[in-house]
Every structure is written in C-alpha cells, then in structure tokens.
Image (tube, rainbow, N blue to C red; front, side):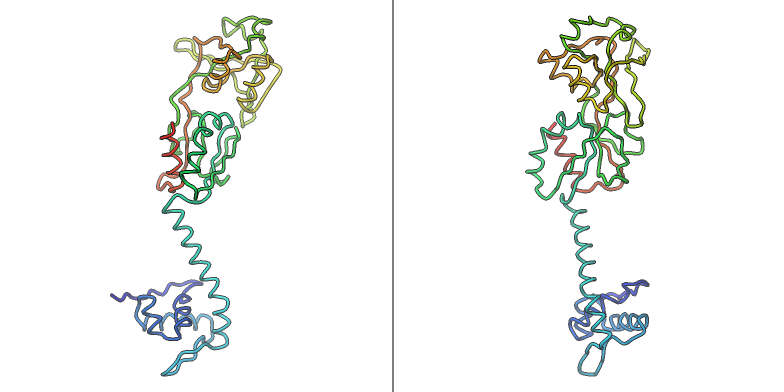
Length: 302
C-alpha cells in the first residue's frame, strides 16, 4: 500500500527523494523504491529545488537528467547521506544486540575480587563487546565521564541511579601483621587506637575517612593518625602486611591475607557493616544490550 511521502522542514528535506531519482533517472521507479507515490517524490524534489534556488533535474517526456547544479549536489549529498544511513544502522545495531564499547568505572579493590574471575568468560561469550575498565577510587559522573556504569559501595551510590547488588553486606575489619602486633600489642578498645599507627584512606572529595565502629546501637567514628595516607584500600592493605601499621578495610579484600596468616583481625566485635557492592547506572528507561549482557554475566558468574 502506498503511503504519503511526508516532507519535513529541515536540511535533509527532499534529499532522499532526490537521490532516488538521480539513481534511477526515473520518478516512478524512484517512488517504487521509496514506497511512496510518484507525485509525492515529485513534490519533494520541487521543494528541494525551491529551497536551493536552482533546478536539479532536466525533465522531458522520455527522460530525466541531472543539471550541472544537480550533479554537484549529487557528488556531495550522496556520500553524506550514505554516512547518515550507516550512522543510523550503527546506532540501531548497538541498541538491539550486545556490541560496542562498554566502559565501567570501578574501585581498584573490586577488580581482583569481582571482575577478574569473570572477565575472560565474558570476553569469550561476547566477542563484539569491547570492555574498558577504568580502575579508580574517585567518584565520577558517569554521563560526563562517558561511562556506561560504575561499581561502588552501596552507601556511595546516588539515589537517582539504578543499582544492582553484586555482593551481600559485609563488615569493615581492622587488621595488622603478626610482626606489628608483636612489637606494639593488640588494641582491646577503640580508644586504644590512639596509641597505634593507623593507616588512613583519603576519599575522592579530599577528606580523610574516619574509622567506623558499632557498639550495640551506637555508631562510633574514630579519628586516628599514623604514618601513611592512601587513596585506595589495596595500598593500605599492602602496607599493613608490611608491618607499617593497622588498616581498616572491607572484609572481603582482607580475607585472603587473614587466611594466609599475613594479617590478624582485631576489634571484630565492634566492626561496622556496609550494604555491599553495587553496579549502578542511570538507564531507568532502557538498558543497552551490552550492559544488560554484562550484568547478567556478572550475576551468573557470582
């Protein structure tokens, strides 16, 4: 069934009709190609000629030919229109199947714990997706940074984001090396930390994070001091294993060194907890297939 050819006001008005006529050198065949009526194509071309202020075709009862302005317009408009068509197809392709560049902003500590175990299987399962992992403990604006999603502790995820849980809640644990405790002893209470070398974390906003504890229903924030300030937990953990001082880190990243006897936990009865680790993104209305594939793969791997 023929449909009316709608002439849109704008720079591309009539261009597709012009290119079809130039390709077929015939208005009827151009109309059949576009699925519209010959009169609609003729009207679109006339409107384009009026806007450009010149005739693009030489029309006779037997043939259709290009004028010199028409040929020049074809030479420039043809490739440009093909690029627009290709751009539309590329955008549609990314929106319909798992393909393209997937950029994630994640804390350094998350990479070995959550991402490394599944990166290889994800890349094998989705060879058309390019996975880019930006490991940084700074809080970034996903849209301004060009990221599809981020991974953060639950308390740092903005309420307007769509959050997907990756881990259950876990505690923050204070750890030190056996050598450190041999020389400095064990803290029995939060107040004892004043006499210990405490390794501290500087947050992305510039503030040094206090150490958090829970005593019954009471939350305690301890201002500690020590010889090292770092911007990420792995650095603090490494320094603690070297005997530099005590560190308070998420329990999951300390579990390996604790099990190996490289670190010992203290003040465990006062450990504060966090909601866990979440993947977050702003796509409330639509999640692109590449991100949906990553989320599903991450859940299945976990």
